Amino acid sequence: PIILVHLLSRNARDQLSRELSALSINIELFICLSIFLIIYTSIFTMNTQLLLAFAGFALLAQILVSFVQWLRSPLRSVPGPLLARYTDFWYFHRLKQGKFEKVNQELHEQYGPIVRYGPNRYSINDAEALKTVYGHGTQFQKSEWYIPFQPNEDQWNVFSDRSIQRHAHSRRFYTNAYSMTSLVNYEPYVDDCGALFSQRLSEFAKAGSTVDIGHWFQCFAFNAVAMMTYGKRLGFLDRGEDIAQVIDNINKSLVYSSLTGIFPSVHMYIAPLVTGITKRLGMGAKMMYVIDFTAQTIEEERASPKTVIKVKGAEDGAAVGETFLTKFLAKHSSNPTEFTNWHLLIGCASNVFAGSDTTGISISAIVYHLLKSPDALAKLREEIADFTSRGELSQAPTFKESQKMPYLQAVIKEALRVHPAVGLPLERIVPEGGATIGERFFPAGSVVGINSWVHHRNTAIFGDDAEKFNPDRWLIENEERISVMNRNWMPFGLGSRTCLGKNVSILEMSKLIPRLIRDFDFKLEGAAATPRGAWKTRNAWFVKPKNFHVKVKSRMAGN
Image (cartoon, rainbow, N blue to C red):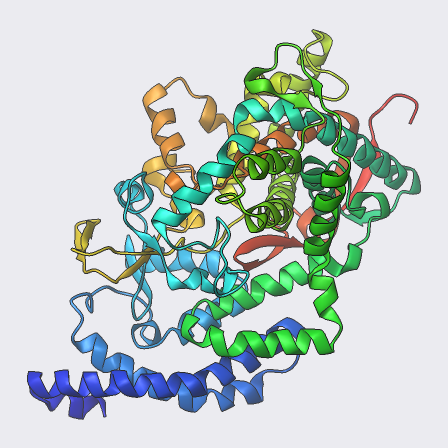
């Protein structure tokens, strides 16, 4: 077929392309069943060999369609894996393996700053592209990959909403609750969780047991964000358990959404099947646990509003006792037509779903890289001891105190550079009229994206040692270089799509890390403990650590 297509005239190729494009609609119906079975087995860890063979016909059919379309593409010279030229199954397969952040880096090392990872998917590693693709005012819409992240077909959250105008309209209702001036509202809740976490770590130290500290960091993040959102804990840190298997089901949801997003047109067929199966397996109630908890707490707050206490000198009318829920309820009461019950419900629930994973992963990354870099750990301990001796660091560190600690902030920034939570390209669609990116013109409809795991290792931006964890890079006396690095630091995204919870996540890290490093020693266990050893991770949108095992020893007097 390939030889015959080459021999066809241009008009004949165009006609064949149109006919095959129409045929691809029917092929997708077959593909959807194949993809569903593969994703299902990926989630439930069954053998997929027979199912991959079952998908073979769909794959070959799609390759033929894509090949003819590729012949007509002005971007056919963009390099990349051979199979990725003709089918998105290449991306599907590599993403399913759980290491795409590494694969993406290797693609750029092999092919250069612009590479393809699908028939119409292009990964960019170019500093100038950031502003073009993600800058404020950009018309680059989120790609269809985000569709499976929508709660329902006709409902959106701030993350999954692909409409630029609607997203901007919705986001403005939430922005104030996440501002830097609002953080003082939430500090007592983080302190409460920090004290409980320290208690748990002291128990581990006395027992001398090995613990999966990554799991406990996520438990801390769950409790902290729940306290800030609802004013009460979900119980993860109290019991050390995955309550109602929420964490496990969030992981499964990420696997489903990240894989299905590659073939969004089949999501409408797969989603009802997944819903039916989860209900039969008793997973439906578990997956709705946070939503139900949120709805119940909203009704409780409406029936008996909490008392808030004004903070002396606080900016923006901040008050201790205020939560995201109380702020959102006030917004709903003042404007119920625009800030609806749906905005209220999904705003609170999204805090827990998104905030717990990203913050838990980031805290894990900070501690892991400190343990693998003894010199950096010693410098941070020295700074903590210095601030403590001067009376400038409380037992429960305040956010204001932590912001004055330059090495602490450099450690946080560097850990999130080396290990950003998100490990896939942030896909956007080139708008009408096309765009020039990295000296190449991309026609409208092309899907382009920048992966922070790739961009953060750009040596032209971050130096020849960009692959290494080096907090000192943020403390050099070169303001211009620091400014360039800051502009290209993107663990929370960029522009109008910057993660709403960025400041809240930084609040949690800034308060917890000095407390942990001051009060406890952590010793890596297993393969990661060796000089050349490394922890294991899995990438399904978030790059999560697996079996981050340590032993804990208390540094506090009397322990």
